[in-house]
Length: 140
Image (tube, helix red, strand yellow):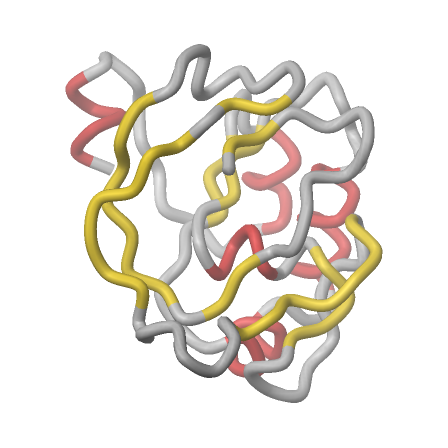
């Protein structure tokens, strides 16, 4: 939230589906476990977020578990994601140190509105989304 405030944005934390629908920009943050997060987004919360995510005119930034929830499911835990992106969140393979923690190079793919050029970002994760769907913008 502090980053957005420094950029002059008005930040509001909400659980209200009407606020989610009305927001000019939405961030679905993430620290947590897939099953618990998927369970939290049930009923009206789920409907409001999924409608929002399907509206290409409303910018939404999904971070970490927020991004993972875009998929159908996860290897981390039982639960049903939003199903916006077909597929399953994967755990890093044997032999890869987890959590993946440290600075990694991030490359924009497609029309990524949040990362226009390559740069470094700090990561701390044990799961990943296997690919950016055709026609989507993102960063790997």
